[in-house]
Image 1: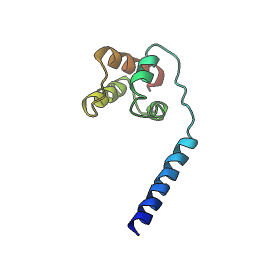
Image 2 (image 1 turned 180 degrees about the vertical axis):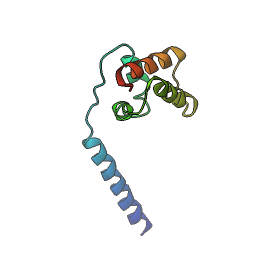
Image 3 (image 1 turned 135 degrees about the vertical axis):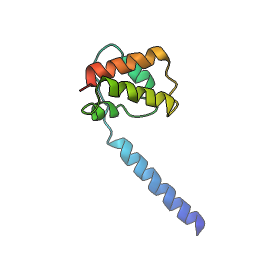
Image 4 (image 1 turned 60 degrees about the horizontal axis):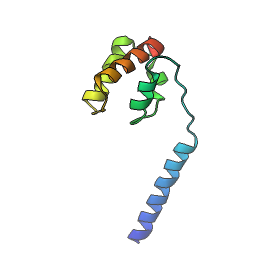
Length: 96
């Protein structure tokens, strides 16, 4: 009985995971200096959908705070040069 329950749960989890991936589209961010740093660093941990989704709410200070949070709170392995390039890119192309 336990094996059947685990199989059902596993199958359901697989179906949900596959369904979520099947409907995703590729996010195309605006071209510009720093885009490569965003792709190389940010997309490692999460979808780039967060960039345009958060853009109505964040100014340059907000984007800088977000990059700092990702590094300090979540442990993103981003060097100082890339962190600056990312924050500058996001502020310029997606800031309020």
